[in-house]
Length: 388
Image 1 (cartoon, one colour):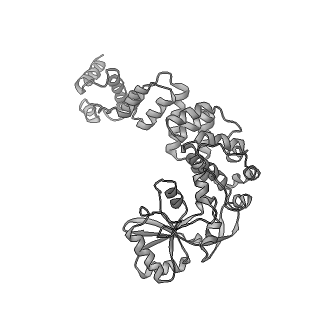
Image 2: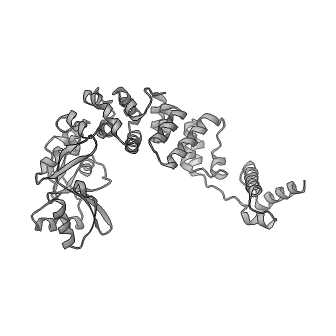
Image 3: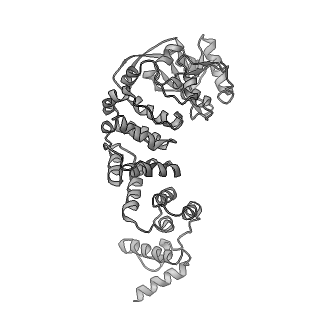
């Protein structure tokens, strides 16, 4: 079956393909970009495969003076730069040995053999440059019907790479049409393999699961399939319904974690998963607001404390604030604080603890006056205090 893939094709790729064809090889689109195109979504990246092995790829790039970087050369992937656009091109390969996460590969000329090693049927499709869909495992049908199905033997596919368990839930949440996964024995029987996955990769997948349209349902499914203990999650969720309601308002992974597992547990798990410092700070902020703040003032947070707008908006949502207040926080033009350090220096004050305390005090007065006090009014207050 042929499809219109004009949105994937461009002159640079057509020219590159001709270079490969001149040497008896070909290029095809593969994997995620094929799946997303068929699902009516715009692909984030264009991944291509070729029946040229890595050495043959490099020879073509060198001969044509094409910039290329051996980013994944051990697995046959070379990054090519064409007019400042980056493409990953991977040689057809077989996984001849696996350890549950990484594979030892051998190269092949067989296009279907390469697709057969992939995880799910809708990721095991390719497009020729004239739009012919190569779909040996009926991935297009599964995609249309919201079915997430492993290629071939599910137990074998999982044992090759245990990260595929989390990818199963991610794709089920994205393409499963809102269905909760049935009880999959192959996942349950292999759940302990998740302990081999690095903390960073676990968090990377969980973030994508939570950010998906059915994030909280998929987290529930992770627990139902006995996977939680092997990725350092508690055995049970705190609340599933509040989390689903929250997700309907905004798909924020950190906030979802706090609602699903509670503030202390979520903070600890996010840290254990080696989340970025910014993500950990954000989790701490939301946790503090949820536990310790009775009357949340987003204007004060934005203008006086300098908290990021998205943090403020999401904190307000967590506090179930009125929709109008949240709308105002989203669009409020933050006023400039009228006093600067030079103003204090002119008054004879030197930088130090007193300097910082004075700025903090003046900002508090500024907020109390509706952020409308002028520089002169604020400095006059300071002078009165100095006289007293």
